[in-house]
Image (cartoon, rainbow, N blue to C red; front, side, top):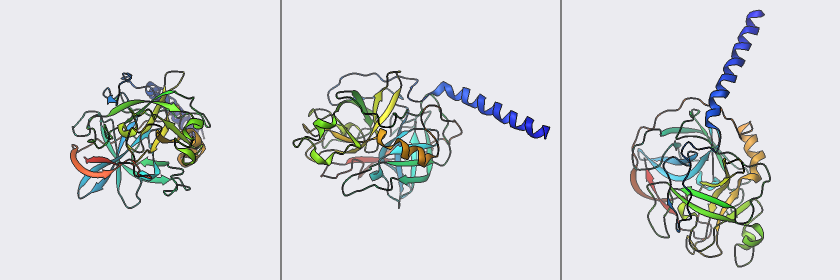
Length: 317
């Protein structure tokens, strides 16, 4: 009996020590903070300044192809869009990347062991466009890989909140996909404005959030499934949106902001699927190194085209 008590005490000490070590990489706090400028049309991000940004890739003919963005929210779960997931595909998650076509230290590739699409996802009406991807092996946090925070359930972003979209999407309408991770300032558009008849009207529901719509910058700078990053009062970054859809008229059409799945509307679902509260202190573990260099390819994927929205050209690794 005494031996059992000692064993349990030892386990508890190990867990406490692990949590203290993990504290060095809190959620939403990049080692290399992003350089935030109001650049028209977006810009190259500072390397590894959005360390929760991931590349979701699928296997085809012996290669790996970038298809969507996503957000690391713990050491084993990634948040992305439901429309990014095809149950017939084999996926992997590439973390710690800045340039998709070059080998980079600190990047890892981990297979997907589980794909969970929201049970009420509607591809026809684009409702509940959210999914979770579980990593085969928990990833070790580092200077290049850390999770984003999640917002509190029900939190509503204020109008014109200065958020940033990130991803390897098109730089401009009809343009090439970016090799280097892009970032662009997208001020939030409140629900009352975004649902006006000459904006998105009834297509936007209260489980969605709009950002942009100024005719200059849009989700062309991000991939479908990627994050809308907003800074909290404490300085940490949280993923408030998941890139869902945009206008088929152009990437940067006035009064047609990028529409995101509103993460705060799905906190209970996220916690239920992951069987834990993913917010502040995920555990760390071991990950496998990425083994291949990215090569260019011309597959048409990413931005979901519910109303003819142009898709982005992808790459393979």
